[in-house]
Length: 404
Image (cartoon, rainbow, N blue to C red; front, side, top):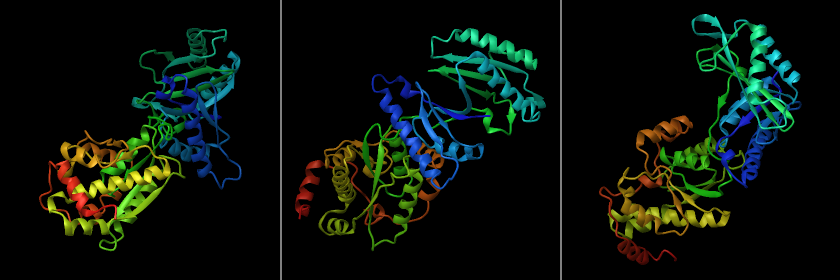
């Protein structure tokens, strides 16, 4: 049983003439991840295929499923996926696959139980018929397969609240058959449920961006949200070694390792940038309240320089409006003026608890909360400016002779 993993997407399906570009990117992203995952396998080499608005994985064994599941749940662009049977577009062949599902349950009488310890008692058939030359309409497929299942099992049809749903999708000379259980039905078998994906757009369809990664809680979440909208994210980290130890650099490397699982395993580009010399220049030649603004503007310039070198079209930060003194609307405007590229702030309207919840979800929170001293916390004034004046900042930067 279960020849394929059937993959569905939502937002991609709404695209127009460039839909195939989105589908190809998603297909390539999944294949690249699976190739890296099964690189040492001698027998199983899962392959991702496309068929008229559907992606599916074949050439795997059931013992591969946990690894494939983890891979797909960390791939943006996927709405959901499920183990399925694939057969020819023939009603008798479809019935044969349905019989296989029923036999699978019969072989495991305790495998499917609904509330109160009862075995499943109600069902529904839901069919989709993209291939319009199939002789039966979707409603006729539902009725005829429903009658067949009812005769074989004695279970009753329940269109509104069934214990189990049998799905049939007919597309381009192939039929996919799978099932999904109601939440009331207990099961020890992952093969009988639709699994939710991460949603969003495939990484790469929106271009490339550089993310300022501090090692704290916010910037990894900002990077993750940018990936979800299809951006391939490269990272830049500023450090103050040897004034600080290597803890922040070690943390950032581990965070990038976690985030790279949501991109391609090959997209773990991290640039470490020394920042101590600039900080010392600011410390000795400027007034304290503007230090953070000057630091951030220089970080923006360095990030833009990297972006242009690698072909990135935007800069990403983890700033949230009003979270700290440097993140007032006035200061953000002054900081952003240092660069030409657009600055994306995915967290701009998030509160801290929302950011923490996302960090926990994507498994960066524990790493981010490990104690470390980063360059942003070094030489920070007690009372930073909250409404920096651009003319004053430009005058200070001119005195620093930044081009020298």
